[in-house]
Amino acid sequence: MSKVLVSDDAGSVRVSEAALVQLVDGAVAAVEGARLRKRRRLSLELADGRARAAIEISAAYGNVLHETARAVQEQVAGVFTCVCGFEVDAVDVAVVELTR
Image 1: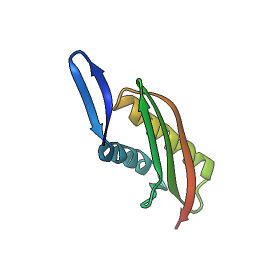
Image 2: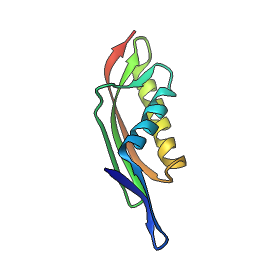
Image 3: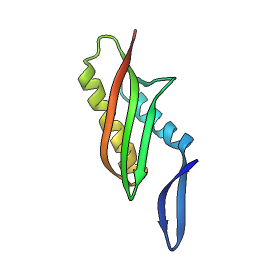
Image 4: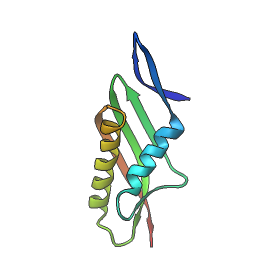
Protein backbone atom coordinates (compact mmCIF):
# COMPACT_ATOMS: atom_id res chain seq x y z
CA MET A 1 0.00 0.00 0.00
CA SER A 2 1.25 3.51 -0.74
CA LYS A 3 0.48 6.95 0.58
CA VAL A 4 -0.34 9.86 -1.72
CA LEU A 5 1.89 12.88 -1.15
CA VAL A 6 0.53 15.06 -3.93
CA SER A 7 -2.46 14.74 -6.19
CA ASP A 8 -3.52 17.41 -8.66
CA ASP A 9 -4.36 17.91 -12.34
CA ALA A 10 -0.75 17.08 -13.31
CA GLY A 11 -0.95 13.66 -11.64
CA SER A 12 -0.03 12.18 -8.31
CA VAL A 13 3.04 11.30 -6.29
CA ARG A 14 2.88 8.20 -4.11
CA VAL A 15 5.37 6.83 -1.60
CA SER A 16 5.27 3.25 -0.39
CA GLU A 17 4.79 2.53 3.28
CA ALA A 18 8.16 0.74 3.23
CA ALA A 19 9.86 3.93 2.03
CA LEU A 20 8.10 5.96 4.73
CA VAL A 21 9.26 3.47 7.37
CA GLN A 22 12.81 3.85 6.06
CA LEU A 23 12.53 7.63 6.39
CA VAL A 24 11.30 7.33 9.97
CA ASP A 25 13.96 4.72 10.79
CA GLY A 26 16.70 7.02 9.49
CA ALA A 27 15.33 9.97 11.45
CA VAL A 28 15.24 7.95 14.69
CA ALA A 29 18.74 6.55 14.07
CA ALA A 30 20.05 10.13 13.73
CA VAL A 31 19.37 10.60 17.45
CA GLU A 32 22.21 9.27 19.57
CA GLY A 33 21.07 6.34 21.68
CA ALA A 34 17.70 5.89 19.96
CA ARG A 35 16.49 3.15 17.64
CA LEU A 36 13.19 2.29 16.05
CA ARG A 37 12.10 -1.01 17.57
CA LYS A 38 12.66 -4.08 15.38
CA ARG A 39 9.17 -5.27 16.28
CA ARG A 40 7.87 -1.80 15.97
CA ARG A 41 4.51 -0.24 16.23
CA LEU A 42 4.52 2.59 13.77
CA SER A 43 1.41 4.51 12.87
CA LEU A 44 1.52 7.11 10.11
CA GLU A 45 -1.41 9.26 9.12
CA LEU A 46 -0.90 11.39 6.04
CA ALA A 47 -3.79 13.40 4.63
CA ASP A 48 -4.38 16.79 3.07
CA GLY A 49 -0.74 17.86 3.43
CA ARG A 50 -0.65 17.01 7.14
CA ALA A 51 1.16 14.27 9.01
CA ARG A 52 0.79 12.54 12.36
CA ALA A 53 2.99 9.69 13.60
CA ALA A 54 3.08 7.39 16.62
CA ILE A 55 6.26 5.36 17.08
CA GLU A 56 7.91 3.06 19.59
CA ILE A 57 11.63 3.35 20.22
CA SER A 58 14.44 1.79 22.18
CA ALA A 59 16.64 4.20 24.11
CA ALA A 60 20.12 3.67 25.47
CA TYR A 61 20.26 3.10 29.23
CA GLY A 62 21.57 6.26 30.86
CA ASN A 63 20.03 8.66 28.35
CA VAL A 64 17.60 11.24 29.67
CA LEU A 65 14.46 9.70 28.23
CA HIS A 66 12.38 12.81 27.68
CA GLU A 67 15.33 14.50 25.92
CA THR A 68 15.84 11.47 23.67
CA ALA A 69 12.12 11.29 22.86
CA ARG A 70 11.99 15.05 22.14
CA ALA A 71 14.99 14.76 19.79
CA VAL A 72 13.27 11.87 17.99
CA GLN A 73 10.11 13.98 17.63
CA GLU A 74 12.12 16.80 16.08
CA GLN A 75 13.98 14.49 13.67
CA VAL A 76 10.85 12.68 12.50
CA ALA A 77 8.92 15.95 12.10
CA GLY A 78 11.84 17.37 10.13
CA VAL A 79 11.79 14.44 7.72
CA PHE A 80 8.08 14.80 7.05
CA THR A 81 8.43 18.56 6.59
CA CYS A 82 11.61 18.65 4.50
CA VAL A 83 11.38 15.42 2.50
CA CYS A 84 7.62 15.02 2.11
CA GLY A 85 6.47 18.64 2.33
CA PHE A 86 3.91 17.96 5.07
CA GLU A 87 2.82 20.08 7.99
CA VAL A 88 3.29 17.94 11.10
CA ASP A 89 0.46 17.86 13.62
CA ALA A 90 2.16 15.51 16.08
CA VAL A 91 4.83 12.89 16.57
CA ASP A 92 3.98 10.71 19.55
CA VAL A 93 6.98 8.76 20.88
CA ALA A 94 6.82 5.87 23.33
CA VAL A 95 10.06 4.62 24.86
CA VAL A 96 9.31 0.93 25.27
CA GLU A 97 12.75 -0.57 25.75
CA LEU A 98 16.12 0.32 27.26
CA THR A 99 19.31 -0.99 25.68
CA ARG A 100 22.87 -1.11 26.86
